[in-house]
Image (spheres, helix red, strand yellow):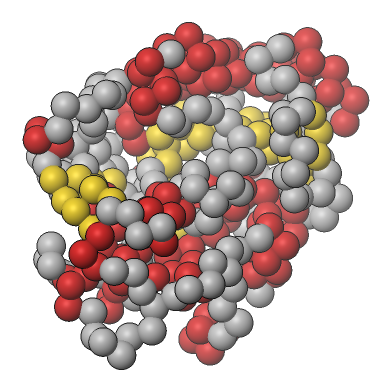
Length: 366
């Protein structure tokens, strides 16, 4: 089976073939030039591709010195934990907006090394907020649904008290608090599972699960960890809208469909054409996790849609034929179904709503 991994150039080219917004909706232009952080993560990687194609030469990516092979243009090496470094670089380029997608989301690493988690998930955020407020520039920061521990039925509202269950969630809450304290004019968007390809081919849910199956290794996912995933390409449009508006405060930014981690793996298995026997499932209580796992921390993001004036996210996955109906759904894949990595990337990473017609969506699989 060919890997056919979607490179940055392919993602950028794909973005150019997509619509910016639903019919009748015009997205605002953000203040430019812009800095995007956290571009090696799934959300930042996808957002950078979208923003650089829409505003060529005006969108820059903050990277570490070790990211020498990062494939995008307009790279700036800056240590975000060093406020003086941020000040020097951002003043030089005269950035008018910042999209902050940075952070360490490695749950086990955060749990075992709280200091590192705090530095990356709190101090970096505070540095950016301190800078944005001092210069009067627009800051949009990404938080996460794991500021909640999970509850029966999920559906957390954005005004509910946070209740993290692990160090990662605790540091994300502290990051939200830092934004509120240092730049009350900034917007914080709580994302859920960003569904798209990743820079290193294993950072995101799709790539990590597919890598296990591709290597003929089993993958065990939880039945009862439930999230509200979103297509990364639709997220880029939402980030653009909030960079260009004046909303301040915290909003949930999740999709409209609740999906368990096990169901996500079912869809990856089916569309990728992998051996269905490799997928295993279990309840979180059957596992002694380090770190502790969330349960149903799905979010109610209806307020987001009201502010935008349109429903921003397609239910993931976008085709009903790829929505699991039960725990053995993936075992009933038709023998003549030709799953592949290109099909998996298309179905799971690209929202069908962003294409003018079905033919545009189904052709030129990357």
